[in-house]
Image 1 (cartoon, rainbow, N blue to C red):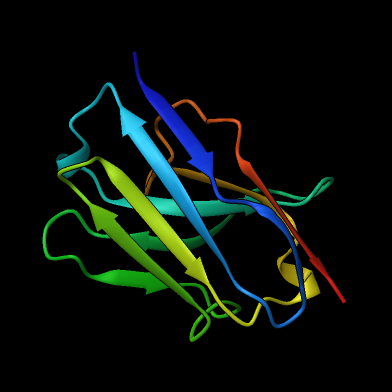
Image 2 (image 1 turned 45 degrees about the vertical axis):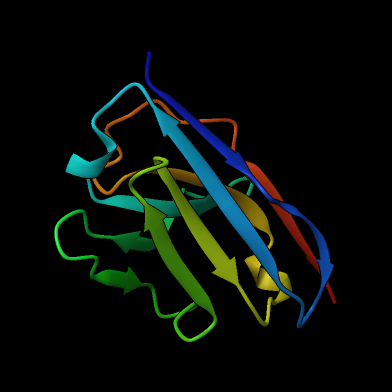
Length: 115
């Protein structure tokens, strides 16, 4: 059974940091580029960052570039998202999935940034 389990969310003040983790199981993790996505109620889920399965190259959307860092641990089938200098507009539920969003979504991790 494919599972994606996000953790590490929480409440933080603007300028603070959080580190999200995603534990994957039930598929060949090392074969897939994996990304982080986020969703605010009433809005479409949007891509935040992605990391390649081949050479470890990374992608960041403009609004997190320079603040967020994605990494992956193939041995333990995990990806992480280090989020620094958080802003209130980063408040959302954060999810992981393949870059093509082909797996069932997990429950997500709520990130709330207060001003």
